[in-house]
Image 1 (tube, rainbow, N blue to C red):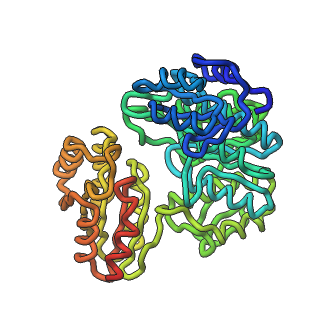
Image 2 (image 1 turned 90 degrees about the vertical axis):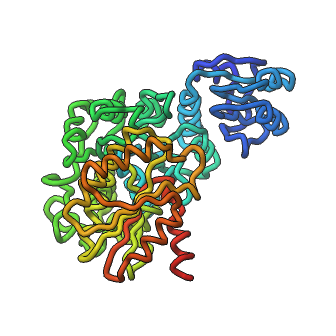
Image 3 (image 1 turned 180 degrees about the vertical axis):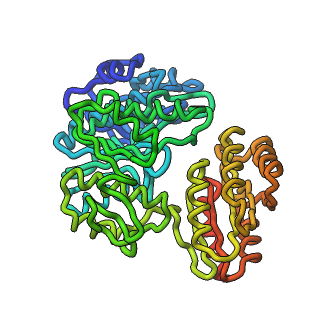
Length: 471
C-alpha cells in the first residue's frame, strides 16, 4: 500500500493499534475475499474471524467490536488489530486511499438524497459509459454497496482496471437503532472528493436516525460542506433542496433541474433550454418521480458537456434497476417497486393508479425492525394515496422470506394497522409473502393492476410470482 502501515492507518481512523506496526502491502478488503497483505475492515469480529484473517495472512484487521476472545486470539496469532469507535472513519479512508492510488485523475460524481439515489446514479453511470468513459458505480442491478459502511467500494476501485470515472451513491444517513453515524454523507463525500454532487430530494426515511425534515436536510446538505468541485446539481422542484444553493461555495456552479429550469419535463418529453431533447416515448420511465431521476441524470451529463445525442441514446436504451417500477406482467399488469418510505409510497401508488382504469390491488410489505414511527408514517402514506380510488389492500409481514434483521415486530404491525383503522381503510393481512401474492392474483381481473411495494419483505416477490403465474 505504498508506505501505508498499521500505525498510520490506526491514526487515520482514530483507532488504537494492538500489535506491531508493520507495512500493509495489499488493498482494503472484506474478510471473505482477503488476501495476503490486505487490511480487513469489519464492523465486528470474533475469534473465528481472527483465525480466518490469520490463515489468509492479512496485515491487520480494523474493527469497532472485537467480540469474545478475539483480542486475545489476535495477540497470540500476531495479527495487528485496530480498535476504532467509528468504523466509518476506516471505510472513508479506504475509499479515499483507493481513489488516490488507483484512479487519481478520475471524474468523480456523488449522488445523495432521500429518494431516487440509486436510479439517478445508475443512469449517470450509463450515460458516462455511452460517452466512452471507463466507469465504475456502486449501484447496479446485481449489488448496491451504496451505504459505504464496508470496504467493498474501496476493494472494487482497487481491483478495477483503467478506471476513468466513478458515479457513487452516498446514503444520506446511516446507522441502526442504537448507533447513529452522524455526518455520514459529509464524511464519505469528503473522502471521495467529487467534481460533481447531485442532490435529489429531502424526505423522512430513516426514522430514529433522523426524526424531522430539518435533521434530514442537515445530513444531506453536509455533502456541500467543504465541497471543492465544479458542479452542484439541485432539484428545483424540492424547496428544501432548492434552498441549498445558498450553501454552495461561490467557485462551484449550480445547475438546477425540474420545473422552470433549463432541464425540465413537459408532456412531449424532456426539454433542454426550450428544445425537446428526449421524447416521452424514448423515456425508460413514465412515472413522475422516476422522470425526476432522469432529469437529474440528464442535467448532470449536460453540466459535464456530454453531447446531447449521446445522452439521448443512453437514456433511450437504459435498463432500469430491479424493483424500480418494474413491469413483471402485462395481463394483469403487475408493477414491482422498492417504495419503502412515505414520499416514495405516495408517489408510486399515484403513478400506478394513473395506469389502471379498473381496480388497484396493492400488496404492501410492512417494514420489519425499523421501529414504530416509520411504519406509522408509511401506513398514513398508504391511506392517503388509496383514498378515492378503487383498491384492494393486502398487507404482509413476509415471515416466509425475511431474516431476523427484517422481522416485523408485533408492535410495528399493530401500529401500522391502527393507522388504517383510523383512516377507515379496508385491508387483509397475511403473515407470509406467498399467501399475500396468491390472494392478490386470485382476486385480480385482467383489466386490473397489481402494485407490489416494500423493501426487504417484498424483494423475493418477482420470483415467487413467476412460479405462481407459470403453474
